[in-house]
Amino acid sequence: MQNENDSNTGKIFLLVGIISIILATSYLFIYKYYLYQADVNARNNCIELKIAIANYKMDIGSFPTKVIGIDGLIIDPGVKGWKGPYYSLSLIDPWGTKYIYDLVKGKPIVSSAGKDCIHGNDDDVYERF
Image (cartoon, rainbow, N blue to C red; front, top):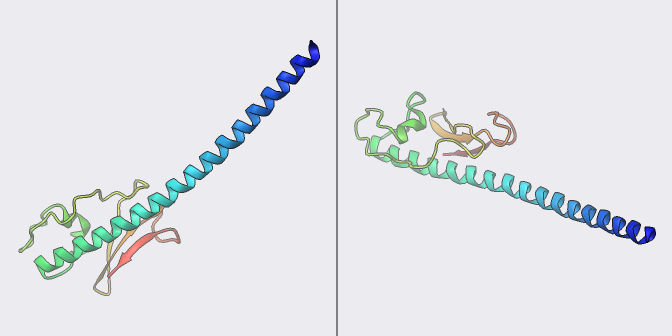
């Protein structure tokens, strides 16, 4: 009788171990997919912002200034010719950081800080004109 209980206990521990490994592997797969999907969403949003900036420029005749920034795509900044809003999605990236707008040599750059939420390093997602 004792051997049968020990055998059943061993089987239960083996089953729990196998289930734990399956759950851990599944979690890692889902987490990697989440990170990949967040990156894709940030990239798509940067592209959408780039299109909105181009539409803004068509109406106004120039890109938004650094002061107006991407907020001027949603809220009328009081410039002549504004026909927005030009963008209807969130200005916050999938990791909770606001998208950044900058002008470099007169050309806009829209960027997300990426998964580490720090602008200016390798995991940033950006679109240039």
